[in-house]
Length: 356
Ligand code: ADP
Image (cartoon, helix red, strand yellow):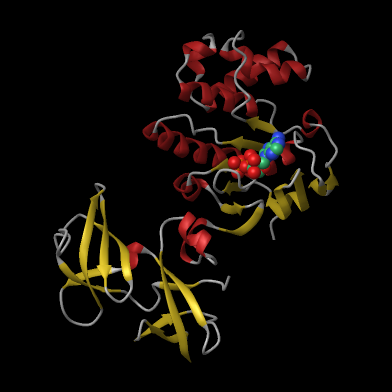
């Protein structure tokens, strides 16, 4: 069992009628890269700023390595922060910005100079030490902000959408760099984003928030493969939703009725026999074949070409429109709107969702 660095217990934050946080329980492991993911207004920033000490909880506690820090002010917590509203000081050079937290802590000039050089190298900004912030690009400014947040060896780094203002290509590059930096330093990262790809690509663990509550948490693969609710199935990637009735249990799954046709669905714990259930089916798990044979007949309604993948909407009489995603390289069928096709998927392609 890994050590817990931060514990959030029964955290509630109310703004009038709004429950920004609603009884949130969360443990963060030492050295973990934890991402808080959710749509706008789901409580991500409130949770992060409660950890930082900027937001006072209505109820609940935050503890650090077993010590209650709920009423400790931000500067006494000693966390590194890269926040949107935490811009670089415009009248200080890059080096002065990075050295500032050390100066406040009364470190010697020599010590500051050495650590500033080290941190700027870490984010590949050594050459820019004497520049002013406004002489840097957005990506470079974020690198400096990162160096400043790391300069005093914080045990925890809190990051609030640090890459959201950057263009897509640069964001992807910095995602690799941040991940590499995390692995190198072993510092605990708590990262807020509304971008699911960003969350999937960087995190050890993702916590999905909605309406101030934790909907589900887990490793990226586990969450993607086994969403528990409609919300998670559609927020993390895309899903088709099918309504089935459980006809019987079979080894490793259930025999179900799907719109009058029998299908088998793999599951370690299928719903009881007779239950009406909802399943999620990922678009890339549907195979597209030529018309005829076993499967669900349909007709391609729309094709959206995305480079390495194509997304199709296939109209079916049985199940309505289904989203299908497939690689474009050496595709057996050239998908054109109007083409009649047959859709098939394997028994472990569908995931039972919790009843609402
Ligand atoms: P997110 O970061 O996921 O976008 P927030 O944590 O910022 O969400 O907000 C969660 C909810 O709390 C939202 O409904 C938001 O409008 C509300 N909220 C956040 N801060 C305040 C505030 N200072 N005053 C009133 N309501 C707030």
